[in-house]
Amino acid sequence: MLGHNTHPISESLFRRAAEVLPGGTTRATIERNPVPIYAERGEGPWLIDVDGNRYLDLNNNFTTLIHGHGFAPVVEAVTRQLQLGTCFANPTESEVELAELLCSRVPSIDQVRFVNTGTEAVMFAIKAARAKTGRPKIAKLEGAYHGAYDWAETSLNSSPANWGEAHPASVAVAKGTPVSVLDEVVALPMNDIAATEDLLQQHGSEIACVLIDLVPSRAGLIPLDPNFVKSLREVTERLGILLVSDEVLNFRQGYHGAAARFDLKPDLITMGKIIGGGLPIGAIGGSSEAMSVFDNSTGPAALPQGGTFSANPLSMVAGLSAMQALDEQAFADLEAMGDAARQGLTKLFKQTGLPLCVTGSASLTRIHASSRPPRNYRESYLTPTKAEFFKTLSRSLQSRGASPCGGSLIVLSTAMHDVHIEHLLTAFSEALREDEKLLRLGAQLMKEEKGNGHNG
Ligand code: PMP
Image (cartoon, rainbow, N blue to C red):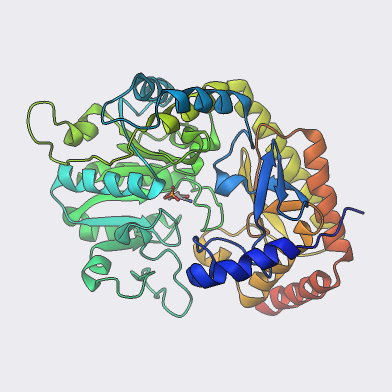
């Protein structure tokens, strides 16, 4: 039996935090179970909290840390750069090197611009598409997360109460979002070729870009149907719409990125997370043609883009070291480990008889509270029982020394090996067999699935 943890220091930190941070945190995504677990340090695949508890870090800062914590080449490169200077009003060789690496690896990228977050990367990709086409609207998949730019976040968390019938509704995430923003976003039904073609045809002359994530994580980490992707590329080309592949999260799908895995040639790709080696970063890449809107070498750019910390040398050298270590073998090893985790979990779920299944590929795996994988955002939507199940699972796994994101997203790193996959499977096995609240919720899930007359 793995250890059960207590968190007195985290509890006292959270009490202090509640006084000075709204809600006691700085990120809406921080889990409170019932209080956030405050990190003290990381060691390779492990996270150690302020109370001295150890967890297999299966979150890796929301998929960023593809080498785990304290990856030596990154530590050395950043330490060296700290002595040389943290930021300049001048470019550095490191940004050229990281840009060269990305352009050489990703078939549809000729040129890159760096920013500081994925949100910013998506914002500039949208602005680039507007500048290129002179059109105001964007289209995006219902339920897909692309950061916090108003247009990009629209319909991110639609619910049965507001998601619309015939076509997905444009639903605001933040209270006070201007109606004009919602009018400028066409929400598309994931993997529905006919309805999507119809919507794009209808709004085509006003749409600057279609923004997609090929394996949208919050919409269930469900890979887009290859025929849907093919149709999107054909329709966008026909209607003069740019296709933007947001790979802020899914760049870790392979050595050449996610689009290459889907045999897709998008006009623009946004990146972030792993390309910064654990430091803040975002990037927009694409064909020279699409990227020409950023070019200010002969006069003002169609899209001026700057940023005080854009291409800061700390992020550049950290990203370069992390990416250089990610050769094709590293991706193959991550994929094999991911497959082993998915197979092990699937076997365990069968043994327990609970209505659970997995989706995902490469180093990313998501658990669903249904007998068969959902096919779109609406099918993966969490009912109250499912939400409670994952919250309980998260707490139960944490007390057994494993911390996947939200109890359902498992993110692997190159710091992990077979022994860590075994640790993960043991934690799940114990939680699903011993945690009485989980067993009660599992029984409730089974009842609800039967009651719905389907297993999706
Ligand atoms: N796009 C996608 C697909 C993402 O997953 C994320 C972050 N999870 C973002 C954009 C935003 O990135 P950031 O948090 O760095 O702003």
